[in-house]
Length: 347
Ligand code: KG4
Ligand code: ZN
Image (tube, rainbow, N blue to C red):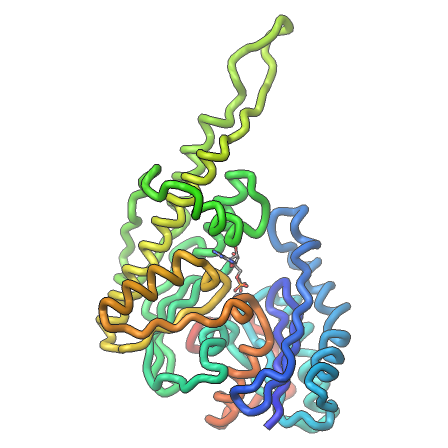
């Protein structure tokens, strides 16, 4: 079976072709990130315009690389949500038009669940597992059993990736913040600054907005205008943060965030009595999270899954892989399929 995956939930426009469940014939991604950088975050209209302009080129490239003709496709899987509604509409409309014109079945895919399925391309999927989804917009702990999904907890405010992006902004490191903080943290002292672990009502819930504010309070006194200087009276001088301070802050922030993620994930896995822990989303690329969860998990007898680095960011191969599973379980979408901006894990 040849499946086309389509992903346009945020700033990436991607089409992939999978042969069966396990062989990626092509996975083309066109990112609009460079267009958002000057604004310090993703601008929804720029993202959806980029997808509208790119979708057909990306689709043609995916077919070409896979050496497959459109008529050779058996199934189309498209991201239904969650995401930016304008961007979702582009992918969903394109997928519906293709499905109608080529008379090929269509399935709508939950982007968050697909991030976890990125782990299973070329592998045998465990029949039950605890999932940790960590991305720029979401942080969710979930329980999966034979395709059924139950949410165990989620963030009450900022997502983990969002905290990385905001802290990077405070430290003057640009956007997106995850990769640069990850890199700088390797050079810093993870115990230089301490952060209080947030108390949540739900046992498996998270909160990441407090740590961002705590970083801001530690940075502000260092960047406030300096005392009066020179003969002309007060002169505002922005002080630069030292490299050492930035590296130590990056390391301490990452140490805290990863520690909280690891603790709650292992607690959830013990609670649900599973052997497998499956991680997905952009933050799954984080070197510290990969090492800490894999090592601590192994000591507790858990098998921890991380997708290959090439599949941690938004891509259509994971959408196709997840869509095939849904299709085999009998799920079908009609031409009434519409994007759902706030689609939840398990819906
Ligand atoms: O899953 P994703 O590509 O897009 C969403 O669906 O949100 O995740 C993007 C997020 C951004 O917040 C980015 O800063 C973060 O993933 N990220 C990382 C790393 N690489 C990307 N966060 C921590 N460490 C990384 N190495
Ligand atoms: Zn994503």
